[in-house]
Image (cartoon, rainbow, N blue to C red; front, top):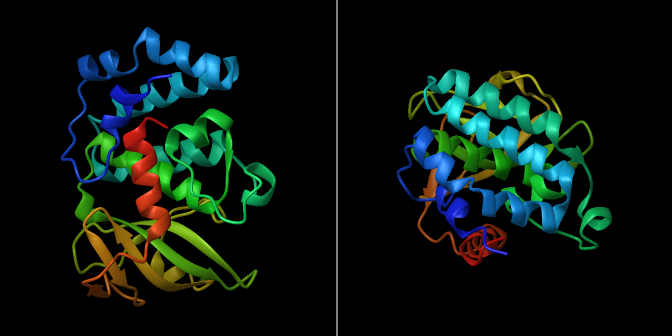
Length: 216
């Protein structure tokens, strides 16, 4: 089943601008046939809504985009631990896998929001996937953060606390590191943190990009 045309849309590192005509081509009848065969009729409805979300977001300001993406995935995706959903200890799903199955864990929410915002046209330099410790449950967690300006306090997009808030108000999260298509940063409470030259340790992130390239 070929999801390649769509997956080019959400590949990290591309400078993406989405037009209605391009999105119509990407989300073709063949694409939706593949979705139906792989994931079922309910998934077709979710992907149709996602297509419409990307089209809508492509003409909006970034502030509206982050709210649209955050709300969409928090509503469309049911939380499910990797051990239950994938029978694996740790598995990072692509947006297609997450939306196709309609379930995922914190990494999957964050990844889906990241790629969706990139498809809408949000600059990569404004987005970071941030690995944190959720102090309320004393567990590792992942969120997506958005920077209006490079040195500004970021906003947090999360599936646990679904309201978008400045990081300074998320005292329940302890940042550890953040990354995107451009690199890896050791996190700090304010701003980006210190960039690390060698980001090869993010093996799960690399695996997600490889799966996208392979059409998943």
